[in-house]
Length: 148
Image (cartoon, rainbow, N blue to C red; front, side, top):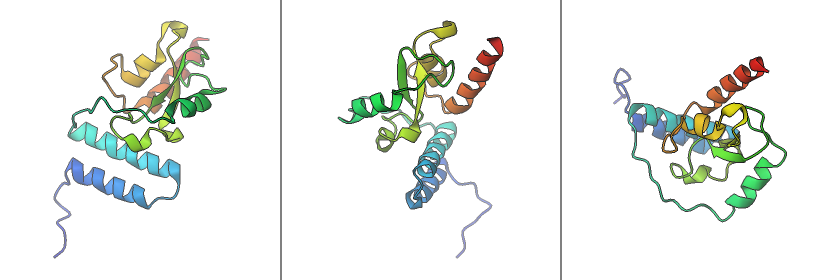
C-alpha cells in the first residue's frame, strides 16, 4: 500500500524526517542545519514545551572561550562582553551544545545602545528563542553599517 501523499504531515513527522536525514549526513554543518530546520518547523507549527534546568557540559567553558577568541559581535561588531549564543538552545537539543556551527557571537556591551544578545538572540525576553537569529543579525549589521 502506498502512502497518501495528499495528506499533510504533522510537525512531528516532518521534524522526525529531517532528523533522520541529518543522521545520514557526514558534513557537520549540514547536520546542524537540518536539526535547526527540524526545530524551527516544529516550533512554528506545534510549539513544544521548553525544558529548562539542563546542566551544561563540563567542556562548555573551554569551547566557549576558544570560540569567542578573536571574534566580534556578528551584529554590531563590538568586542566587549561577547557571549556565544546558541542558535538552537542547548536545553532544547543537548547534542548541539558543543557544536560550533550552532553558535553565533553576540555582545551584551550596549554598543549603539543595543544588547545584541538580548535583542537578537532572545527578541528582548530571555525566555524567547529567535529562530531567525541569523537573518536578523545580518539585517541589523547592514542597518548599523549604513549608520556609520
